[in-house]
Image 1 (cartoon, rainbow, N blue to C red):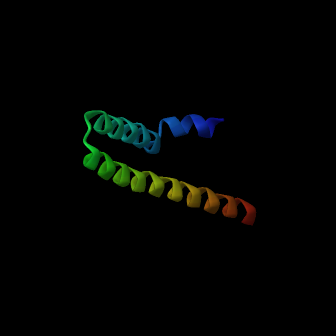
Image 2: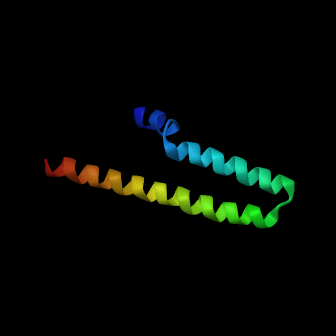
Length: 67
């Protein structure tokens, strides 16, 4: 439960909320090209964070098993 609460204070959560806000606003304004560009850029950034978090957890579990 603690990990889930810490997620809301993390950089990843702030980036997700920012990405949703920016892309939604661009869609609302009718800027389809900027909407798609921001969707791609934010998508890659958020995906990178989730991949790094996955590998960090995987390495942590392997260290615990070795001990």
